[in-house]
Every structure is written in C-alpha cells, then in structure tokens.
Image (cartoon, rainbow, N blue to C red; front, side, top):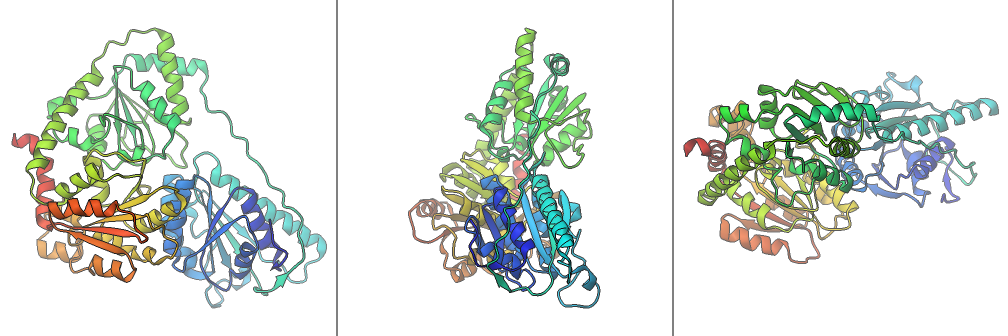
Length: 575
C-alpha cells in the first residue's frame, strides 16, 4: 500500500514498490540529503518497516542480523559519498555467509563524478568484490521526451527486478543498486504511478540423476566417511537428513556448534577437544577415505589442518556457492545441490543397494570422543578462575534461546564446551570482530524469543554504539568476558610469543574504556562477576525479568586465562 503523498521522483517510487513486491519487509535507513527521494518513498510505503540508524556500519550489521533471523531480504538505504563504504564490512560478511542484503545507495548524476562536487566518489561498483551483482540506475535526463522517459522507466523496472532476483537465486547474497539522483530531491507529489511489474523466479528442483547417485553410493558404501558441517542456518529438513545419514556405521559427523544441527548427545561437536587428544598414530588410523562437507567456513583450525595433513581420497563439497573453495586441498567433486536433498538421496541409495557395510568407524571415533570428554571434564574441574572456567559454567548453566557469539574469545570457547540453544550465530563469513553487537541487535529485533550475546570486551567496545538504539528488546541479554583486551592474542601462535609489553600494547590493547562505564551510559543494567560464586549469582540475575537490557560482565585474569587454555590442548600429553 502506497500513500498518496510521495516523492516526485518516480524512479525511487518504482524501486520501493518493487522492494515491497519482492518480500522486503524491513529497511535500515541512514540520514542524508541525496537519498531524500528514497527516504520519502519509503516513508509513504506502509508495507515496509523503517529503522533509522545514523551509523551506516552499524546499520548494515543490524540489517545482516535481521536478514539472518528472518531468512528474507533486508534493504539498506544511504546517501552519496563515503556512506556506502561503511556498509562494506557487513556486506562482505553477507556475501560469504549467503545472506541477502539489498544495498541501495544514492549518488550524484554521472557527469558530476570527479568534478569536486561535495559527497561525490566513484560509487558504482565500489562493492563489486563482495556482492553478487552491481547495478546502476541513471539519473532522469533533463528535458527528456515522453518516449525516452518511458524507456528509462522500463530499464529501472528491469534492473531492480534483476537485482532482487539475483540476491535470492542459488546461494543467497547481497546486491548493490546505485541510484543516480538529480535535483529536486525533496519535492513531493500526489501523482500516482502504475503498478510495477514484479518478475518471479522458479528454481530447478534439487536432485541428482539415479545413475549418478548410484555411482556415488557405491563409492560411499566402501569408505570411511567424515561428514563435516560448517556454519549453517537452522534447518529441520537438513537436521533430519544428517541424522539419517549418520546412522550408517561408516559415517562420523564433525559439526561445529554454528552448524545448528540437533545433537542430543553432543557427540558431533567439540571437534578440537578430540583432535588435540589424539596421537599421530591415531590420526593416521582415523583418516577418512571420503569427506562430505557443507555449510560455511570452519572455526576449527585443527580440523582444517588435520584434513590437510591426512587428506582423504575423495572430498565431495555440497551446496551452491558464489565462488570456488577447496579449503582442505583435496576436493574431487563440487556437487551443487542442497545438502539435505543429497544426503537424503544418498541414504536411500545406500539402503536400496543392500550392501552390507562392515565398519566400526563411527564407534572408533565414539571411543576417542568419550576419552576426550573425560579428560576435558577433569581438566576444567581442576582449573583456576579463568576464561575457560567461567565460560564452561556459562555455557553449561545459562538457558540460551537464540545465541550470538562474537569472533575471538567467545566463538572459540563455544566450540570447546558442550551447550544447547535454539540456534547459534556468529559472523563467520569473514570472521572479523566488527559488527558482532549490531548483528545480535538486528537478530534480537527480528526474533520473537529471547536473544543473548556472548562477547569479549574488545569486540563489544568496538561496536558498542549499537547499544544506543531505543528499539532494543528488553529481554535481550549480554555476557561480556572482560580479559583486559584481546585475550585471543595471548594464546594464538602468531602473537603469543611476542614480548608481553609489545603484545599488550599493539594487539591486546590494554587500557580500553571500562565496559561497565560504557554500558551504564547506555542505560544497560550491569552485574559484575570476578569469581565463581559471583558468576552463579550473575547467571540467576541475568535470567530475571526486567524492563531493561541486562549485561553480565565477567572479569577474568588475562595471562592465567591464556595459560589455562594452552594447557587444555596438551592435557592428554601431560597424562
């Protein structure tokens, strides 16, 4: 539904009507003058919710988080100049994560580019390396006759339809529509426009020919199979397909928590925990013949290195992708099919073949995982107060619904400690710390249940501006592990051996503003925990009903935390 009073710019009205027709229900807008016709057109559209965020970088990550939860395209609108550049981190994350963002940037007419006019840069194609497509809508020519104008209107309709279909086709992802706008910018009109043509896309069905699946099943029946699951959205169809396929005795599943697979016994997660406790001989004995992978990038460096050091004979990579990826250096088949469809077909073919699969591959891995679980519990129980001790209690006792974890400390510990939640998310497309809070805020706004963000202090402070918004749901919770800056740099190989003075100054960045002070300025209720007893009280406080967002700040010793985490990965060798 479009209000009578609207922008006089018919192209902007076309764009907004097509956004609505293609199912866009939320648009994150940032103020400006050049994008005034777009904002006015949006304001007149009652079918779209408009969120106004001054900071374009935060707006883009909020839109990303919203699209992640809603699993539908979310749009962004900004003014000309450097504004669109601030979208780049979130757009890159969306590209590699397969999340549909519709980036709409206002621009000066082409003839004014490089003419020292204010807020003018070479905008078209500026995001070309991290979008599925870049589209340019030219300005309305002055004095254009009716025939030419109608031809350009058709071009706008075709271009916007193409862009919106591109975002949703195959592996989803962001697109960039650059809109050249000339004066007048704020002029209003009651002139109606004709209903816009909305082009529909009918995707092909995902299935392989019977002869192909039969040949692949013959290969799979005689192989030790490792199913590797990277980050994915919750999908009960895929979840069921994985459970069915993993019931074969020659199949083991390596699934990160971000894969969002339902694993009641939690035997498929905690990948690094089992790998770090294995001897070289055990690793060789457990080498898979066939790896079947799906989902996004892995958090686990250990699994990636294991499969590079002990490569399988075959590696089948499943799913649609916008690029060619051979992460394990052993890919033999790139199968562009929905993973759920492939696994369902392959399971059916294996059952129909009536081949007696004589293998104890799953049970061998089960023994190794049970041994690792025992060693892990013993090690954590005897550990002193630290990141590991605190996060083990948090992940084990807090009742998560939707869980967002920041990159760095939080996501790595979430892979080491068994836990449950409705769904778990992290910006793993690019794996940067920027936008972790904004993404969680966008997700919390879109999700009808409760949302919790677990973050490190540096990640939260980097994106703390997202907490200034007045529409944050009061049931959102945050758990911030304050280990005096970037605690991960005290552990990872590339920086852990740097002299502490230089490391703490340039990498960990000690002396950051206090999390509690910044949170208080944003009217966030806080509770601080510096030992286990305070942490237990803090978890209970966090779960109480409140009219305000609540943040639990967990303060841990920096050097001790790094030492205990290092010991975690050699605990078996100690024994």
